[in-house]
Length: 103
Image (cartoon, rainbow, N blue to C red; front, top):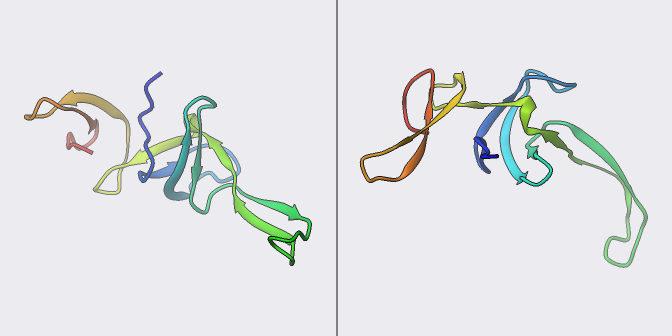
């Protein structure tokens, strides 16, 4: 399945505990169909002290979220669906369905 969201895109969460939050995509796991979004779905990890990190403690970091719960935000700050098209150079591009502009 072709993913419409890529690393670096601005997205809005449309379902789940973080509904309404926006952020930038930090990583995509295509095999699990999940994405890591900056500042969304924060989880707490309990780290034991070790030689590399002698302090240990509770660390907060972003957890993954299913890509179906995300929508892309285009350049005009609109939440939009994506269509595929070909630009003048013959390259396949993503096009915003709301504004009709290339993403």
